[in-house]
Every structure is written in C-alpha cells, then in structure tokens.
Amino acid sequence: EANALAVEDTSLETIVRRFQDSMSVEKTHKFWETQPVGQFKDIGDTSLPEGPIEPATPLSEVKQEPYNLPAAYEWTTCDMKSDYISSEVYNLLKNNYVEDDENMFRFNYLKEFLTWALRPPGYYQSWHIGVRAKTSKKLVAFISGVPARIRVRDDVVKMAEINFLCVHKKLRSKRLAPVMIKEITRRVHLENIWQAAYTAGVVLPTPVATCQYWHRTLNPKKLIDVGFSRLGPRMTMSRTIKLYKLPDVPVTPGFRKMEPCDVPAVTRLLRNYLSQFLVATDFDENDVEHWLLPREDVVDSYLVESPETHDVTDFCSFYTLPSTILGNPNYTTLKAAYSYYNVATRTTFTQLMNDALIIAKQKGFDVFNALDVMHNESFLKELKFGPGDGQLHYYLYNYRLRNALKPSELGLVLL
Ligand code: MYA
Image (cartoon, rainbow, N blue to C red; front, side, top):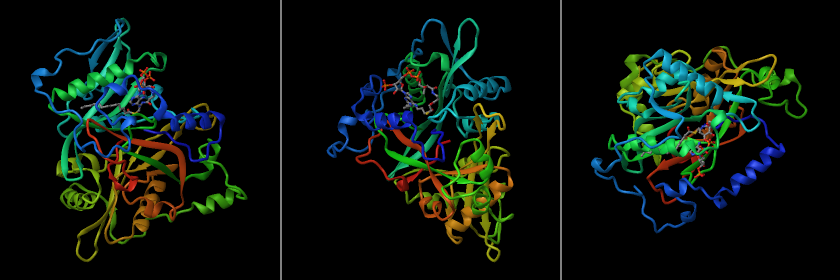
C-alpha cells in the first residue's frame, strides 16, 4: 500500500513526514487506542502473552445493525460480479487511492485486478463495503476484506485481509475511516472471524513488521523522464540503458508459464517453502488456483520443470499494478510488476528472478518492485534493484506478537 519512489527523496515535506513518522509513537491515536491492536505503550513489554488480545464473543452479542454514518451518506454492499459496480469502485480508487509522498503517482488497480482480488474462494460479498452520498448516489468511500488463513508460528488463524480503504479526497479528515473500519470489523465478526491482517504506508499502532520496497529499473529512459528515478552520478543515459539491459528470453532450461495442471505441484512447493516463516499465508490448492494461475494483466506465474524428472523445482510470480503518472505531458501510466510468491530449490534465486525480470521486460513493464520479505534480500542487490523511499508496515488486528518481526521472517504478500 505504499506507492514509493525509486530515488532518495530529500524534499522538506518528506523530511518532515519522516520525522513525524518517527515521532508517531508520541502521537495520540484517538481511534486506534480503542482497538484490540498492539499499543505503543506496550512495546517491549514481553510479559504480555502472544495471541488474541480479546476473546471471541458469542455471535448473538455482535451488534446486528450497521454503525451510523453522517446523515448525508448511506452504506452500500458492492456486488463485484456486476460490471457497473466494479467500475464504480475502480473509478473511486483510480481518482482517490494511494499516492506517493510527492503526489507524482497514484495506484491504478485495474478493474479485472479488483474483481480478482476481491473474489477469492469463500469470499463474502458483505465485506465489500461502499459509502454513497444519499442524494447523488455517488460512491464516495470503500473498504474491503477477503478471508484468508494465516499461520502465526504454529497456529493457522482464520483472518480477514483488509484492503482498498479509500475516502474521496473531498471527504478526508472527517473521521469517516474509523466508522468504516468498525463496520467491516462488525461484518467480519458476523462470520465468526476475529482477526485481520493489513498493510499501510503510514505508521499506526503497532506494526508487526516494517518492510522496504526495492525497484528494478526495466525502462530507464521512461523512469527518468517521469521522475520515478534519476540519472546516477557520473552516469549518462546510454550507460544507464546498458546497465539495466537484460537478455531477450529466459535462460533457465525448463522455465515456462504455470498451467492449471501445475496447481498440485506448485501448492506442495509453496507450502513447503512458506513453512519456514514466522507469519505466512496458508495456501491450499484452491487458493493457489485462484491467486497464482496466470491471468492476463493481473498475475503472472512461471515455474521450472526439470527437463529430466519433470518435477516442478522452482516458481516465481508477480502481479500487475500500474500507477497513473500525475501531470506529465508525455506519459500517463507507469507499468509496474510487483513480486508476489517465489520459491527456488534447484535454480538459484538470482537466476530465477532474473528470468522473471526478463519476462516482465518482454511484457512491457517499466519497473519490477519487490519487498524485502521472505528470501528476497538474497537477489535484490545482485539483480540491480535499488531501495525505494517507501516503507510498508504490516499489521495484525486482535493478535499480539511479543516482538516485531524482521521482513525476512514474513511469508505474506498483500496486494
Ligand atoms: S491501506 C491504504 C489506505 N488508503 C489510502 O491511503 C488511500 C488514500 N487515503 C484515503 O483514502 C484516506 O486518507 C484514508 C483515511 C481512508 C486512508 N489504515 O477518516 P479520517 C486512521 C488504518 O479522519 P482520512 C489499506 O487499505 C488515522 O490514524 N487507519 O482520515 C489497509 C486516524 O485514526 P487515529 C488509518 O484521511 C486499511 C483515522 O484513521 C489509515 O479521511 C486497513 C482518521 O480518520 C490507514 N491506512 O481517511 C484498515 N489512514 O486518530 C484497518 C488513516 O486513531 C483494518 N487511518 O490515528 C483493521 C482490521 C479490521 C477488521 C477486523 C476484523 C476482526
């Protein structure tokens, strides 16, 4: 959820914002202080137990009516099977969702992406929550959740993954977000689910991990032209282009696109790999089929099938998330690929991900982004990724961890 820039950002605003972030533990959080999340005052208190902060309550005790909105607004449940409604959600986000600190780029999650992200196996339509203006019926805010099983140490916990919280720019700072968060919490509780996971670029009480985005330039000229990156010191454009040049086709023998028949093998490979992380997604075959089978302009997955044994030995995937370039006369969109789940057992991580970069370049992406989660650190520097200015904080709702995690202890990527 952090839209990051590849260049070091030394603007006054950014310095001030970073200072404020670093002081965030000093700020009061009128809403978050009332919620069952790790509180800043408890950081370092190892006497507190790990696990749920509040117990589940009987469903009959869950509030039956929606929370109150300001009088001019009403709740709406968004049917993401409807082309019209998903276009409304798409347009709200296209114009009002996450921007970088300098307001140069804004995420432009594609419509097909949103319908994929919001309709995984077992999804609840009641967790796709919109707010409309009563008179115009215009959609002015949105929040969503999807069900997921997330393993924390040895416990697999049913959770909601909360994403796409968005309030129209004209309605900001009116405390609408807390009402939306309480309403989705209520609807999650009604399904007898009591925990959630989410990520944000802002510091809230209290991150379970703080990760960094890294960026691999694929199209240097465009990235420099639009201000996403800068020409390095003592670098010319032609040297930069040469630096980031990639082979035309993947180099690993047996490297190919994932197909439906690969679901069982990929599930085994992924489950085995993810078992080593402290907090990780618990994928079964249905999840892998939904989240990882290739979908054009949404998600790409490739694997290495051993030419001798035909075993699937390695896997890599990335999702498509363009950003609108704000106010540039020459370009309107930045095509970005985001590293998703990757497993290397026979190929080196570096070679596997280099093949992923080659595919992304072939497909016309301008940049390939990756977080420093899982084993990603092992390839980032060698493959010429550079650190971005954006941090992404991971959070759990109603689940306490004794200590914050290192990014490399996380086996979870949220969209
Ligand atoms: S992260 C992406 C969030 N979206 C954007 O950044 C898009 C652009 N921004 C906006 O649309 C608005 O600025 C938003 C806030 C909607 C973000 N996560 O209404 P307000 C707190 C959580 O006056 P607005 C994503 O989608 C803030 O600290 N809380 O503010 C994951 C303050 O509380 P406190 C946030 O700017 C979302 C209060 O809101 C966030 O008009 C996970 C101010 O409200 C944020 N990103 O609207 C949600 N930003 O005073 C939590 C601000 O206490 C899910 N705030 O500091 C929790 C689990 C729920 C399910 C549980 C089930 C068991």
